[in-house]
Length: 261
Image (cartoon, rainbow, N blue to C red; front, side):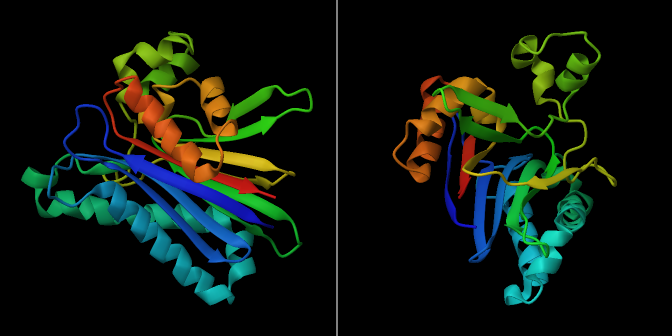
């Protein structure tokens, strides 16, 4: 499997500190780890929960990979191992609040991490683990030239529960304040809900990971069109962040793009 990828994060409109973070690590020629994280409860010149979470997961997975010695073990069991990594992160971030409630009372983060690799049966796979309202999308252009984008993760927010209970519409979701109310972000609960999924990678798949500063500001189809019209994936991730900024959406921005050939 051949990867191409790009990522970018930027300070949002009227923000003092960028609490979003992007992490991309090519573990080996055939295995890739990608993460977007959105932190809460930090302040300028202090530790950032999104950075702590992403780097912790990166070290956790890299240690299991062990320079390729456990590559197939990692890919075969990616859902379990990514979940264990997020549980470990939850304990680490929670320890800050326990140590100093005054400074770190709201210390937490939403996160989506995805591992790409080939399993022991020779099947190319993508596996994600997810908490909060960061998102992962699959983007494709059909043979007739139309753009198709599908959200793979599901937001863990009060607003999403309102949608599920048919109390608001999917369109109203983007305008209610409850969209920013996370049900169980990492760092605030002893047993957060961690969603996982693993599936085969089809030909010419393009995956997009975003924080809410992007996908709350820009609807899915325009996001896909911006990505597919860009010259490369690094440029595309920057364009997404710039587009959200141009709309004056009051949040930070982060995006990662992965193409699997």
